[in-house]
Image 1 (cartoon, rainbow, N blue to C red):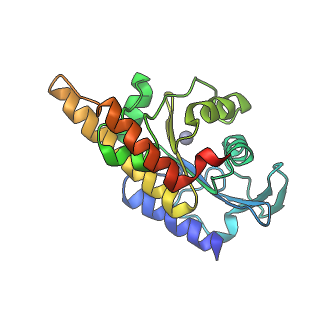
Image 2: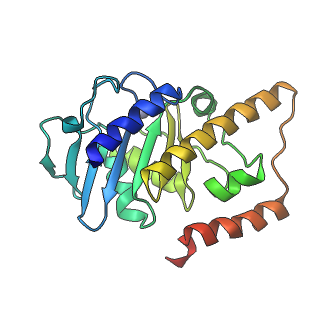
Length: 213
Ligand SMILES: [Zn+2]
């Protein structure tokens, strides 16, 4: 059931042009069972089958599936170990956010709703090679208590209490990256003012209960 759902969501992401081919990866953590369901390495989303989804323990031991899990498995496991509010992770290579990743430019809160959903500026993580623990630690640091981070020269990672939320945040960030870059064509792009940021950050904490741990 959950494996089929993951495959369906992957195809949705391709349709929405948030990712393409086999690039990116996603996972769901069933916290009560201690199991991580994660996409396999190198299989195109349009060809991916539910039985190819790998099932791992939080320590990374594969307990189900004959296919190797994504190279970015350390990043997924590190986030689940350190963020009790996160039960799903979506990593994509969407065009506008990836352009910011190449420029190594953070995405500031340019609308009020952005804070409510994402929690604040989407920071650029320090560089780490694909699949390394270094990248995993750097991404965790950039995420802080928020729901998105930019992977330098790479792409976008978003997290959520479930897969639906992690995908939604992925879309929210990419649309805002597009709006931000379009505004920059006019020579300026303003972040919302500080008092509005702190007002909506309170709402973010109320929604996510992140401040409780
Ligand atoms: Zn990637």
